Amino acid sequence: MKRRRKVNERVNPFKKLQKPGKHVKRIVIGAAGLVIIAGLAGDATYQIQEQEQAVLSTFGVPKAVTETGLACSSADPGHNQTVLHETGNKNLNWYNMVLDVVSESNASYFLLWANFGKKDGYYTPYVDSVNNDGTLHGHETLDGFISFFNDNRSIFASDQKNILANINAPEVQSPAKGVYGYITAPVAGSRILEPTQLTAQVNGSSENSQIAFVLKGETEQTITAELKDGTAVAQLTAETLKSLGESAEGTLELTADGQVIASIGVLYNIAIPEEDPYEIDGFENYYGVDSMLTNYWAVNKDTGCTINLALTAEKGQVFDGKYAMKFVYNETSNGWAGATISKEVNWSDCDALQFYTIPDGKHQKVVIQLTANGKVYETYLNEYEAYAENDGTVPIKVTIPFTDFVERDTQGNPAGGLAQDKTSITSFGLWVNAIPGTDAIGDDGMVTGTIIYDKITAVSSGVTEAIFEKAESGDSEVENPQTEDPEANSDENGSQEQNSTSAAGQDNGKHIDKTKPIQTGDDINYIPYAAALFVAGIAALGAVIYRKKKKHG
Image (cartoon, rainbow, N blue to C red):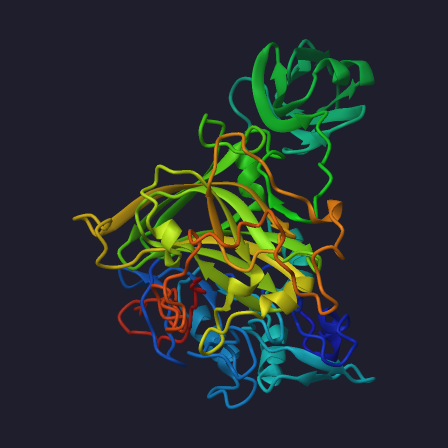
């Protein structure tokens, strides 16, 4: 495909950044710079130092550079996880240099890391302003990045549609016998809440072929389709939809002469639940379907580790409603794994986080994480005496004041900042970091555990110390802040006073010494990167790519 080569003709994706200081979070949507080459993706990692570069390989053969970007070992002052320095970067033409090396290899692609914000982690240059003539002003590596953007070997979101349209699709051979096809509407995972048209593409049929849609919810209904020019059409009526009942695990099948030739999962008569601004998750809105849970919770893990999230309705594990979440991890002796969920809310009328949990008794580092106002705040359950002494058999209700949360990425890990930044909550995370040398580490160097969580919510409690209370199944005493009078337990400065039900005098929330530096189980400046030195053919290509994985906790 012939591409536009002038910079001013290719800056349109940046035009949305009209206001000075606007960072480039969406400068590249999805895959920030994707070089399509021949080959297959592989996976390998190794540690590299600041400004060192590497390329992903498998048995010496380059496969793919799955995630990469300029990186450094520490953040600039006042920044959170900023890995591309504002100034002083050693190679201002890094992107083009990497492009040249990878494009000469047999790698299938390379993919740039995303940006999160100008002071919240960026791996590609940002734009501060756009001049009237369309030229850009911003990060010191921006000129090189624009050249990379203009190169006909790179593909950005704005290019994808045209690129795909010009790819010659291979001819699809019809099967020797039989009818085949696929459902075109609705799409898989849809919530079907009103009458709708069902459509499918059908091939290999004859005049005598009987095409139908089979809908399975609480009941099973079959609707005969009309077939014309390879398109099957049927109407789902309100009456038929009502008869299917409420089903989170419904299916829609396409049949030909009674044989299923395509099937998708759908939700029948289940509307999107109204969001509670105070609740992180009560695990009721997934209706017991694990795939719905994992659509909302994003998991991350270290190399060699696994994490699995699942819903449980088991008696003794659920404390509010019908379901709780099982957090199952399997980690190396210095590994980590966790899950995050987006939550963009203002908790100005709250002072604590409350949840139910059943510890696993493995005594690893259990991290509760909140991101607020661009900062990552954490508290570590294993550092509380009441939690550390739990052998994994006693369910507890935990209330942790915001003042206990420390700034993960600030030197000295100061506490208390969340009490001010709580007005801008953006995400919540649950993590487990393995602690080397603990009894739970097996002979194979692995530690495995299962932690139960339920009803995670922000509350207005008045507590000044963390509270760990024994919980009974079905015990739910979480109070929604909006049901309380915020004036009743707040002074004019917003600080919370102790109320009669807070049990603040209990010693079960006593901290292990938090005056010493926080030990996360991993150095917070330790950054794993996906990479391995590659060899292409006989001659070794100079490795030039850098990969970083954010380590949590």
